[in-house]
Length: 547
Image 1 (cartoon, one colour):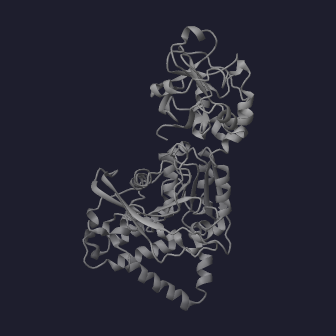
Image 2: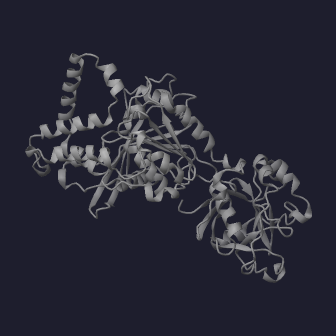
Image 3: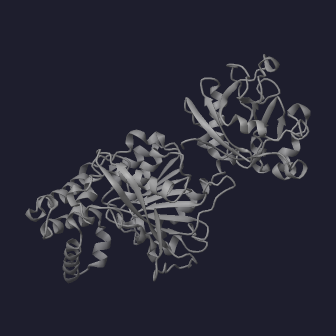
């Protein structure tokens, strides 16, 4: 259930204003099971959005951006002039006129379900895994977004960003964690968190969460620990240059502490207890820029954690921002003016087709899973190909990476011969086609026969396979025997869709490489095919299922 309300009297106060107003809503996840085994019949997940989703020809969202807040925060905080004014305005990096920006309140935070709603200490003991899974359900099921252009987060949201990259590795094009480390929370960081937890639990007024009078002393001590954990000595000195101002700042800190619900705060910090992305960093596939500042007391650079761990992220980069008048310690994460140039660069290199134009991109060296399925959306319907790496590892690796990179999207079944084969795999964009036209690969030894539904690479002879594939419309084993056509997989769902692909042009439209009619396809792409052979079926989109 989605409830939308327009948020009135909210101005982005951007340097370059956007015409898009924030929209708030709630979505309810039913029968949510927590990592602990505890359950809630309903989990309310609150969110704020800017802009509108844009879908491609296959209906997939291509412009959604997820931004996740820090501990105890909420998504609306990103509407501040310092953040939104640098990113969301017209012609800015995340222009709300071009991007669909999703700002969720994390489980246990903001207006999402949390202990202070009534359950208090009986509220399920959520962990970061639960929070990320809830965010995924909100995005995928609640907002019907099936792909994210970018996942980014600040502090706790940055830690969630690492987890998104591991839990849903092909759901996004890029990742940007701001102010975090991808390892278990230990040392001073964990000690500060333990102080916060113990301060609240140790206050007699807490009463195991069933307090009538807030545990003020515990909350103040907890707020002190949090303040010491996240502050910047340089900025504190600048903001409080006299003892009077310093004392006033401490008094204000005490007042802020007593406005916080003790159970909510306790849960905030206990949620991070088992956080540790380190063992699975190799699973992250999207380009990732990890940004920290040198004056961040939560993630001090002298520990050398990110220099070590980023080497395990296949497409990762670590950026350390030097201390300056512009940095704010841990809070630098919410000052895009300091780091937005890196965001611009990340968006550039992670543009979905960028890898297709760069044969040296790391994506092309990745090995495919042992077995996986590629869903293919066409103008006749959908079908699925199950690929087997042990059949033809070289060819299957290429097929896997081409599908992940969007190589087949918006192309044509350019050669369909009734009772024989349906062929595809020449991009509709000449710029991409020219890059791959002659990128042949070593042959895989044939494994299995060309029976009906089997998929293999087209070729003119030894060492001639590139990107073109064909699907057998009948058993062609005898016809193709001994010619070196190595099957890579088979159609396991929707073969009736393949049978319906338009075959009226026969060899005339594609002709195969032997017929010498492919040059115009490489040089003019879809424009030439659509003008001369308008009845050809389109391959709208192809992607690895479950990613």
